[in-house]
Image 1 (tube, rainbow, N blue to C red):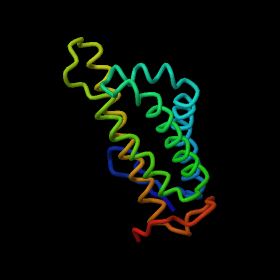
Image 2: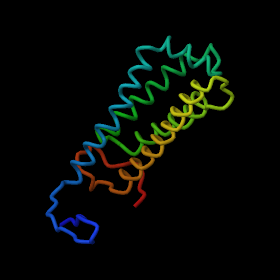
Image 3: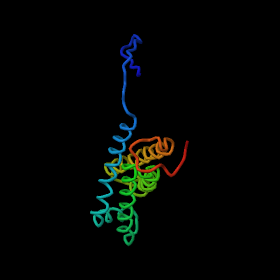
Image 4: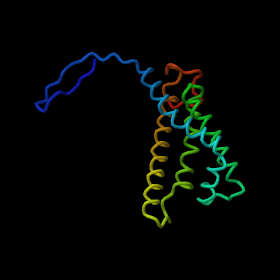
Length: 161
């Protein structure tokens, strides 16, 4: 039974709400993982192009292609783990391990002269930090719910309950 506020006079309407939480979480996992699967496959299929940008942000040219490819593997693995619920908590941690350093190293807006470029990098920086926060919540959800979370292949590795 859910309660929904209808008007400014403080009147409430009782409405039966029959939503399976496991389905809502699954839809959220699909939407969340989709972004990372697309990004990860971009890292794996456009490594050379992305390595040039990576080098332009201060990563040594010699390691940039390996860094791009390696992070692509990390992103795809994490996204698939979250999506499938196969140690989804660990998969979410993989995404945090990718997102926080990427925000700082690749999208830090400090030191950029061009105001438009600085604004773009700041947006990417904040997006990566927000996604890292969301991934931490996904980690906590998997770990807290444990085997009670539906539509998963495995139990979580961590126990925050």
